[in-house]
Length: 160
Image (tube, rainbow, N blue to C red):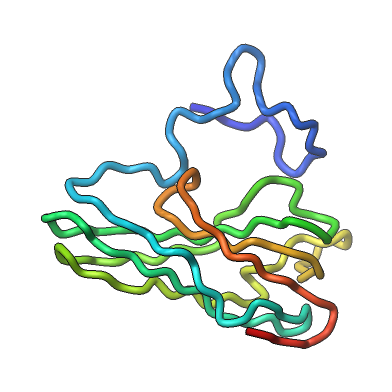
């Protein structure tokens, strides 16, 4: 088991621990299947939201390309690219959707993204949505994601 010896500490760029490599043996969400599944790129209903009432929808199309039925858990991660005083780590799991797909079928996993999804712990230890750039990433596991960029502004503006 790989347990981090830090959490919200300063990032020192070195990710190893004593004599072990930094990479996990299995990524979060890793699993085996009897079929193959292909993920499309995530699509956002808005490319920009304000900090006061950030609401948008993130969709990703998942297709079963195999010959057997699939039970797929689509994961949503948020990764801060710039701005903000928190989120020093790479990404955080903020949601998941389970899909049942027949062979050859496809479906959209839909995530309603709001303040709970985009908030981080502020300096006063309360949840806060801070302006800056974030990437919403979707995928079957933490090491196999595709992302879409979202700008969070101080205003209440929205754009597609």
